Length: 187
Image (cartoon, rainbow, N blue to C red; front, side, top):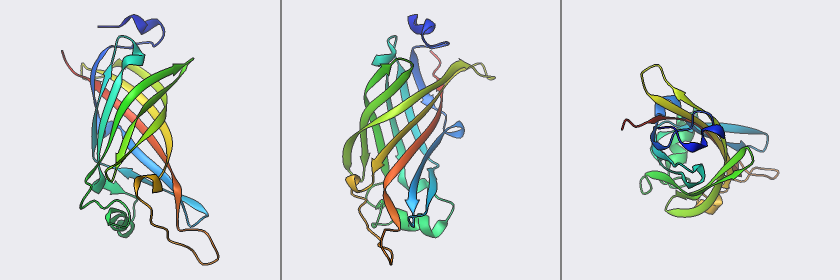
């Protein structure tokens, strides 16, 4: 059923959606060696979006498998899984649970609680609505892009690897980048 917000958001449908992990990306970048950025991804994640008749009443929950990190370098990935960084042996998932959705003109933000290594902090995702529409399989899809930056140290990922001559091997600021495609559940 199309909601009354269709004039504001073309194709918008109220309902429950599942993240299509095969067509979505959970990625990040971090300053490396003070000269460049390394990008990485989590390959296993799931989530549910609930779009309400009033888009500002919508919500999202997501779970990310910390063991699924992929920075295209296995030795680095193994180190990131270790107690020095994510401590995957004791903290297997990262979670996000929204606490609010805010519209500001054509821009949106999703406020929520992000939990990493058992530490929960509020974050705000800058949200871009990419669209809503039918797919080739008789279903209905929605697409979203979201961005935020977090401090890894705020979540207990506080290893410092100093470099000779100053600076650190891994920066504190993590840029989080999400490309999410979700499928509307059949009624």
